[in-house]
Image 1 (tube, rainbow, N blue to C red):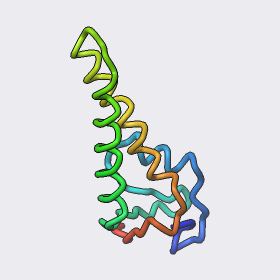
Image 2 (image 1 turned 30 degrees about the vertical axis):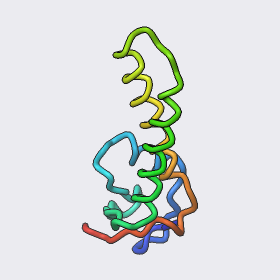
Image 3 (image 1 turned 45 degrees about the horizontal axis):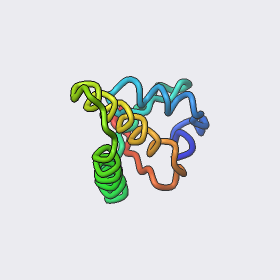
Image 4 (image 1 turned 90 degrees about the horizontal axis):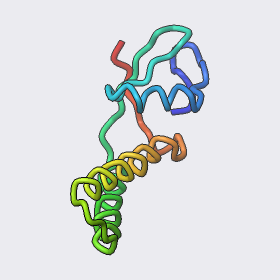
Length: 99
């Protein structure tokens, strides 16, 4: 979704980044205060599965002496990779208006 369905305000990259960092998953329009909830889709599931598989497979080959650091680094990289999905083309993201 590129713009608000009520007021036609275009959502910026900053709006999407704020959506990611707030952890609630809702996209809020600045002008009319409409709130949009993302619809579950198969693309997010496939992307998440591939990202977890590839990073887990890659971290098997990294030799670190401290296991806790290895796990923390894995989760940090995984968080960044999974957050990139929200910056993919807007046509992949479907939203429903809840307020």
